Amino acid sequence: DPDEYVLLLADRKLLELPLESLSFLQGLGSVSRDFSLQLFHSRLRREEPQKVERDNKKKSKGVEGTKEKGDQSQTIKQVSAKHLGPSYTFAFDAQNFKYVVDPLDEKYFGEKTLSMEVKEVMKTHNHHWTHLWERLLGSKDRPSLFQKEQVLCRCSGFVYLGMDPLLANFPPARLAAFNLPECHVVLLFDRVLNKTNVLHETNLERKKSAGQLSLEKPLETALLLSLSGVGCIVLNQWHSSLLQNTQDAAAVLDNTLRLRLTCGQTIQALRRRDDRNTPHHNYKGPTEKAPYEPALPSSAFNCVLYGLPQLTAS
Image (cartoon, rainbow, N blue to C red; front, side, top):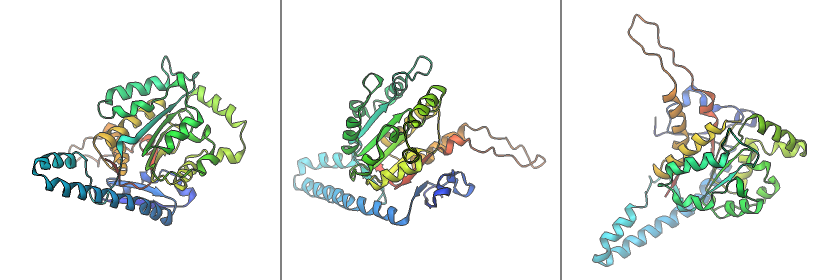
C-alpha cells in the first residue's frame, strides 16, 4: 500500500544491514527505523503538544477572521498558504531550516570543491528556499565548532554536508549534553569516499581511541541525536561519492521543501528514482521466459531514516 508506513525495530546487528531492501517492504509509503518502541513513543509525545498548539493558533486566526468581513478573504489566503498536511503528520517550520557545508580546503575533486558543488545545486533550486543561503558556509570560511553548535541549537531542521562524518569534528560528549527539542529534522550527507579523504581519515583515526571512533558510526550518531531530542534523522549507512551525496541532498531538499512530502515519503522517493534509472527487461509474450527484474543498486538503500517519518515542512 503506497499510503502505508512501516517502522522497523531491530537489534544492533540487524540495524547495520540494509533492511529497507527486503522485497516485502518495496512499494510502501515509508519505511523508517528506531531503536525501541519507548524511544519512538517519546518522539511522538514531544511532537503532539506542539501540534495541538499550532492547531489552536489556526483556529483562533479563523475566528478572528470571521469578525470582520473585510478581512475574511485575506484570512482564507493566509491559511491556505500554510501547506497544511494530513492530520497524521507533524509540521516543522521550513523558514528555520539551516544549512552547513563543512569541507577541508585541501579536498578537491578535479577543479571543484564540495562547496562549489553544493552551490551549483542550490542555484538550481534556490527559488524554492532562498532563506537557506544565510547559513551556507564554504571552504574559505570553515565553520567552527561554536558555529555548528549555534546553528544546531537554533533551527527546526539541520542539513549537514561534509567530507567527514558529523561527529568526526564534533565531540560526541558535547552532542550528548545538548537539549534539542526544537530541532525536528537532521539531514546528514557526509562520509564522502575518495583517495584524499581516506588518507585524511587515517590520520584523524590515529589520534582517537576506539571508543571515540565507534561513536562516529551512523548507528551511534543517530542514537546520540535521538537522545538529544531530534525527532527524525536521515543519514548514510556507508560511504558514498560526492556526486551521489549532492544528488541525494538536492532530491531530499526538493521533495521536503518544495513538494512538501513527509520525511518518510522523501526517502522512499529516492529509491523510486533509482528504480526508474535501472534498466528493466521488456516482456514480449508467453513464449518468452519470465522477465528478470534487476535489483536496485546499493546506493538506493544507503540513505535511511531513524525516528518519525510523518514530519513535514510547513
